[in-house]
Length: 67
Image (cartoon, rainbow, N blue to C red; front, side, top):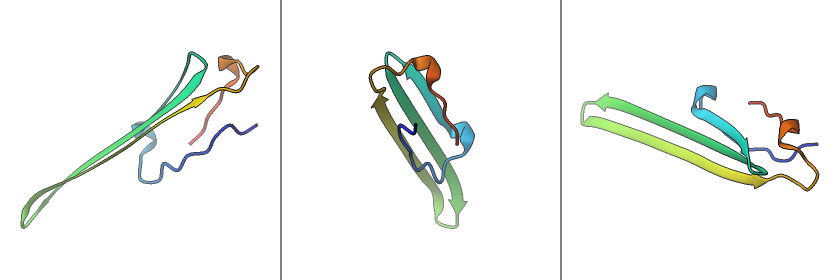
């Protein structure tokens, strides 16, 4: 069964981390960009952190995820 779905559009797969620990699934995503323009340097940063408790009876070993 699907526990959760997250929109990680704009993040590369290498920028997304999924951890399963202590009965919770934690998703971290972080993206940084730096551009040099005629006006100087521009920085772009965004992150997502989400923590989801596993339903009763679901083992941490049963959790799978895909991007």
